[in-house]
Length: 195
Image (tube, rainbow, N blue to C red; front, side, top):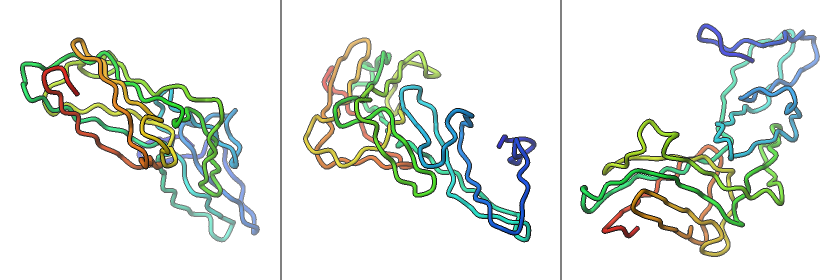
């Protein structure tokens, strides 16, 4: 499907019969990544993967309404400074660790996700990728990650903050869980070069 003139249009028409035909949608569309039971997603490119539930249509019921859902979890950081003159330029933020997988297969029919073992690349955003790399009081920076199950130990996932005057590492606490389609906001208080 492609988005044209305020509506979604099928790239290839579907001929409907009396029997039901299952239709589901993904974004971005990739001809090589089109198996409904194992749609591959990753977070290193920071692509916002979207998918719909499966819907059945037939010749007597040809209309459907798809709701697209986000496959990744959104991790947002809101920066606060005790001394505004200490504001800095962001070099990068990285989320990484053995508790974070960078690739997964999503079953579009059941909605279940299977983490791909051995793929633990970090999710990274660089200052140059933002409209401005300058972090003011109240600045927000977001990254998308493959959803993770409950973290077993403090530090199984680490968040690294690098600015022009600060290098800090924060262990994500045990019990944290990041789910598909949800936003998790963390307030980052920076006080005299301390996180």
